[in-house]
Image (cartoon, one colour):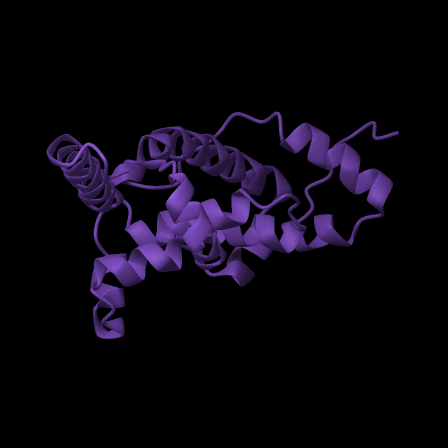
Length: 183
C-alpha cells in the first residue's frame, strides 16, 4: 500500500511494478484536467485532433500511447513528456480525453447511415482507412495537399464535412423526389 506519493518521472512511473503503477494510475486519472494549450481545441490543427482521437479511441491504451497523447496535446516531444512528473502528465491526459469526448459527440453529426445498396456495394470497406479517407477526399486525392489540409483548424474541417454531408443528403432527397422509383 502506498502511504506517500513519490515524485516519479513518467518514465520511472512506467517502470514501476504493475501493482504500484496501477495505484498511481488510479490516483492520476482522478486529478483535475489541465489545459496545457493556448487555443481552444476546435482551433487546433485538424490532423493533431485526429491523431489524438485515434489513440484515445483505441480499445486499450499503453503507457507509451498515453505519453504520445500528452505529447501531442502539449506539443512537447515525447521524451520530454517522459521526464515530466507523473502527476503533471495525468492532468494533461485527462484534459485530452475530456476534449476528445466532446469531439466524438460533435462528430456524431457527421455520422452517415448507408442504405442497403451502398452496404451491398461494400461501402464498409472504407472504414479501414479511418480519418485518412476523409483527408484523401478533402484533398481531391492529391497527396501534395495533405499537409495543408491537416494544418487547418479543426472547426474549419468539421464545418466543411458537415456542409458536404448536408449537400449529399439534399441531393439524395432531391433525386428521390424527382424519381420516386429510385431508392
